[in-house]
Image (cartoon, rainbow, N blue to C red; front, side, top):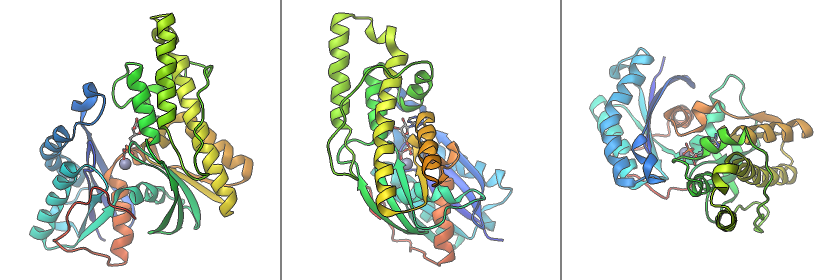
Length: 332
Ligand code: KG4
Ligand code: ZN
């Protein structure tokens, strides 16, 4: 039996998980509520919260998996990309514990981990497949050729899909992160407003023009009727969600056809979105693609997915040494 402790602290979630033979035994996430009233993550506050939460979260993950630190065989940790101060907490904690237990440390690229969350279930995607990774900081179309062999086909040239949800939600007066709130409100509304689509390369995304269009639309309508947002909130949310999801699925569909894959996957916080999941499943069933989306607990930031990369690197004995340092702009 082998046990890997995985640690994730790249943004505003402090998370620890225990993975054994590729199976996630426990996956604890402490979400930082302190950012809600600021409309986005405040880096300094995030670092301080990670420091307070990391030990209780690791203890809870060990307890749920019914093991002790002495049982651990390796520690996997997010090296990047992410906020420098946040990453420092996870990496420093992981290095210290690995050194004290004299066990190897495994560095993990966070975006690769989002994709690898698709391997946590019983049934696993076959290679090659294309994954649409949609999070708060990234929007990527990834061609996955093997466990840790992935190429980015295209990504957002400006805002990520999650940012498009969060920033338009902020314009509506919703709390951060607004993605899940828009998802909930949209279920009671209709997509009746149209926003222009960006014109970028076929595998690229751009959401900054969309964001500006929503801003001007809201300004125009509230000039006419100051209660416009309040009176039409559900429909505005449904229209924003519809517009973002349409772009994402359209691009995924083009890439799937071009690369001739028969399996598609999604990953990242935005893949928790109910409309996006619905459209993804429709795309897959219409084209006979096999569809993979992790459970919601493995879509939003969590250490379970970090442990999945950790597990495959552990099998390859792909270890790092204690000189590793956080890499806020780490690529794969
Ligand atoms: O992957 P993630 O947890 O963190 C990053 O690595 O960024 O993604 C967070 C993003 C946020 O922008 C949040 O608003 C969005 O995922 N999100 C959603 C939903 N749940 C989380 N967006 C739309 N609908 C949801 N249900
Ligand atoms: Zn993430």
